[in-house]
Image (cartoon, rainbow, N blue to C red; front, side):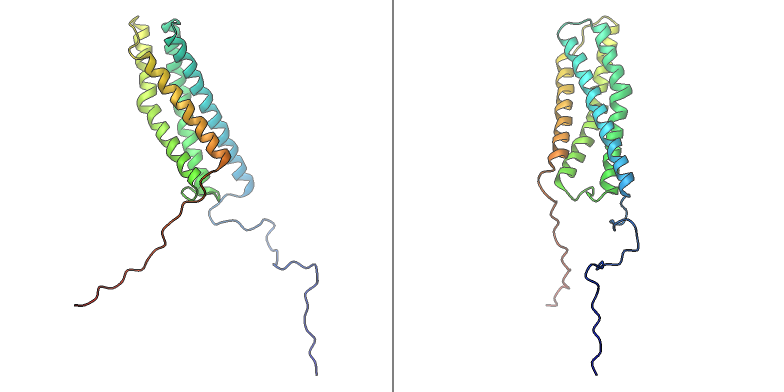
Length: 192
């Protein structure tokens, strides 16, 4: 006696769908929250680039002979109240994107390079640029010549270039994935 063979329906799904959303990697955000975090990161990064560009314009104006009493305190104010908090927020949202999205924090070269550039830029803004702007603002308020006006232009210009480089990296996503060495098992030492 022949037993009937079971054939699936021609248009039936091959995988049962029990969840309305496609499977996602463990520890990642749902798409709606991922988009919100990415939008926050882009907004903060654009604000950081804009505040750095404003500092560059003011530092250049001071170097070109504009009134130091009005230029350098304004540049220091922008650096202290906008540039530093935005740099920290850009770094924090970038790390959160790396940890909570499928891109990963150390999985792709463009993410690793962007992370290193952003972390380095945040440290340099904290240690070099904003203190230099503070010294220039203090010197201008005391009617003394600004010690390193060219250095302020150079530092803020370099920061702008680095931020533009991170934008290009994020857009192009070059260099592929980070290759990891496979783990090898330790061999037991051989007896003599």
